[in-house]
Each structure stands twice: as structure tokens, then as C-alpha cells.
Image 1 (cartoon, rainbow, N blue to C red):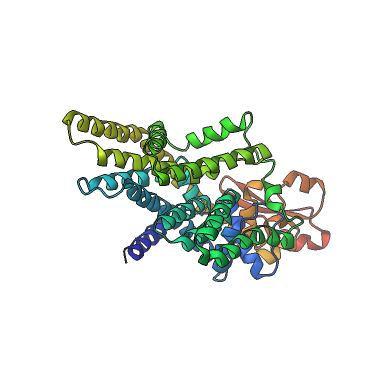
Image 2 (image 1 turned 135 degrees about the vertical axis):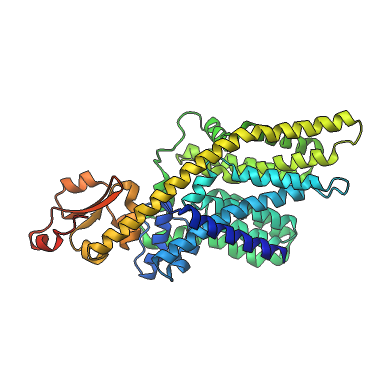
Length: 453
């Protein structure tokens, strides 16, 4: 009953957030929406960016059945609800890890509050939510798997890890390790484990094999990113992990790791080890040439935040009632930690306010693009005038609005113009969209002349 109420509240808040912020997807999310719609037309091509991710396809395909705009709204609500649910799960885990404290029942609640605020204050988290990114969803799936395992729900934990593995390759190792553990310790899960571990490679590689020129299109597209780490990869990844949260929370996370070692708590040590394993995998990916951007570190960052929050709760719960000086010293340290987070929280709030303003502009931008396409006679008429071309920034947005695969929209205007083939160039100039026919065939000049935007 409580879970249903919390789920309903999360969905309601997420829907309200989407409406209030007027958030809209950006490059990757528009590409995911395109996948769902194009499958319905038996015309999916995954050669173009973004990199293939089976997880988002599980949502974009059924959502596409109800139409383009509803599909977008459903995905935005899903992404927002998942991000909020991640904070709630972090709070629940911190509460659980603090343990029952009859003498100080408020201590676990303090830990939960620290975890919730900590996750929501992760550097860049609000931006990921406002662009309907999938990384907060993957983080939530991982936290959910931990929570299910601690609750004794082994099958649910494994299924959540499989879903996370459909979103990030870093999660493959955890699904495999947990599957091996469940295979040995819970024999009744063996059919589920076998099926789940088979689904992961099939979803990642068979679909691209059918819809692109390479089984490994996801990895191919991820290479050569402008966000790769230059210099020492280990230091670079660790710096990106550290930058996810302010110094007070970094110190709390270090203290939590030390506390886990001192207490020899198996659960805490396992979670810390899992976080470090994810970071190690990310370092290996960085050496391979992939970007290892900060959002790929949300999962270990969230786990470390949970441990940090639980450490705060544990200290408050188990501080000796005597002498009074020691008790007050502990309280003072926790209060100082909370106060130390305030400047970062204020800065994060200012940044989020600016991001919401950007969301308003993105909503207006999309509305103008859709109005332009409608005024010019619809996507079908525009396509007859030439190949659709736009700068890379708008490639997936134009593809979604035009009903095309992302790879079917050219993203190098200068090169397209130099080839002197008929194109329709979509540009955004001072907030106004234009669709200009260039090198139009003589037979189409009169019909296409009106595409001036």
C-alpha cells in the first residue's frame, strides 16, 4: 500500500514537473523516440547517432503507438519519474543501512534526508532530467536492484540488473556476477538467470545487426567523442566522480568507506566494492577510447552517497549518550556537514533555474519547428524538394519532427551544399526556423520555392 502511494506521488510530481518546466528532449532522447516510431513503419535504421540502447527502446516503441507528441510526453514523464524515484530509493537505502534505532528513531530519517538531497544535488542531475536523459533511470534501476536484494527479492533484483544492462554496458558485469551468485545460491532462479543473460547480448547486438551496417554500432559511434579524457585516464575518471558532489559530501563518502572497513560490515563493504568496480570498468572504457562522461558515473556516485548518508545516520544513532560533550561534538560535526552543503545547494538551485529557462526556449523552439513543417505542407511535401539537412545539434530533433530516421538527415550543411545536390536546409536563426531549398531541380522550382520558412 505504501509503495503504491509513493509511486503515485512520484508520477504526479513528475507530470507536474514536466508541465511546469516545459522541458523537452535533446539530441539523444529525440533519437530514442525516432527508434520507436520507425519500427512501427518497418523502417528503423540505427546507423546514425545516438548510439543504440535497448533500454530506451523498450519505452519509445510502445509509447509511439499513441502518436508522436504523446510519445514525447510519456517519455519525459517516465524519465522524470525515474529520476525522482532514484532519490527516493537512495533515501530508503540510507534509512535501511542505518538500521533500527529504538533509542533514536529519528537518526535513520536524517540519513534518508541526506541521501535524497544528495542525489538531487548531484552536479548535472537536474540537467539530465530536463533533457529526458536515460542515465538517472539506469541509476534508479541499480539502486532498486540493491533494495530488492536486501529485501530478499532475488528475482526482482536480477531483473532490474538486466534492465540496467540494457542501458549501460558497465552493468553487464553486475548482472553476470549476480546471476552467477543466484544460480548457485537460489537454484529456482536458474531459468530466469539463463534467459536474462541471453537477452542482454541479443538486445544489444542482434537489433543493430539487422538495422545497421555493424553489430557493434553502439561502440563504434561512441568512439571519437569530444568528451574523451585527455591525459591520465585513472585520474580523469576519479576527478569526474569527485566532481559529482561538493567537498562535504566527498568527505562524508570517504568517512563512510573507512567506517565500513572498521565495522567490517559485509553489506556496506559489498556496496563500496560494487561502486569501485563500476569506476574501474569506466576507467577501462576510457582507455579503450570511450568518453567516460560524468553521467556514466551516476551509479557509483549514488551508491557512495547512500553510504555517506548511512554513515551520518549511524553516527547519530550510535553516538554514546555520555559524556554529553562527545554527544554534542557528534551533533556539531553533522550540523557542520549540513551547513557546508548549503553553498553548493544554492549554486545548484541557480543553475537549475537557468536550465529551466533553457527548457522554456526548447519548448518554443520545437513548437516553431512543427509549425514550420505544417505551414510548408507537411513532411512529405518538404522531402520531395531534396534531402533534409541541418546542423548536427538539431539533427535528431528535425528527424523526429519530420518522421525520418536520424541517419536520413544530413548534418554537414557545407558539404551538402558543395555537392550541389538538391537539399532542404533547416536552420534556427535568432529563435526562428527556416527551411531553405538549395540546388532544387528545375522541375521542382515552382513547387518548392515557397519553402522559405
